[in-house]
Length: 270
Image (cartoon, rainbow, N blue to C red):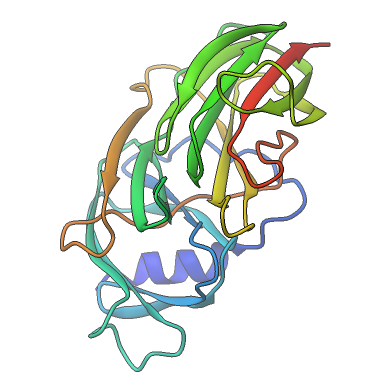
């Protein structure tokens, strides 16, 4: 049993509110993990390697980033206040972490509304001088989205659980939301700040049909000589080899949800 992850998660649990400084680059010999609970209406306990690690972990709760020894961690999610992890509602999941990598594991709903998980590898490669990175991840039970910039579609039909990213000059951008394939925004504009050498990662999570759509974001400091971001794909949490939870989530300025629909993000440089 790894006591380091228990202590790290206990110390790193945060609420999805306010603004936080970006996480530092991964320490030598370590892997970095953030955890986001994106399954609505399900307060849970989280067990790591058989030990209770997060108690009464509510939708929208965040943990991390955690600096962990590389290796594989077994994670199980149970009903709140369960006696142990023998009857999980999600998992158990083997979560492999490699040295020098930054991960965000997201427990969420798929487009049809079924619990699942996606493990993302956060892109830590350094943008050009004077630029930051914006990453948008669609992990909500909602339709596909388009991403616009300067009035043009730059990413089409972003579907759950995919991601898109772009390096942008440092500055404040205006964001608005519309349905994929349409031109009129349904929400916004909203200001989004892009910081130099920071990867700002925005998540749309929750359920459109259930009226629980929400937005969360994390910021991760970038540096040179790191592999790029890779989505590990979707894994059913009820399956034996599903993937689990996710990220240091900080309330961010990009609102991707409106009127119970998934969105098209409109980015316009101010």
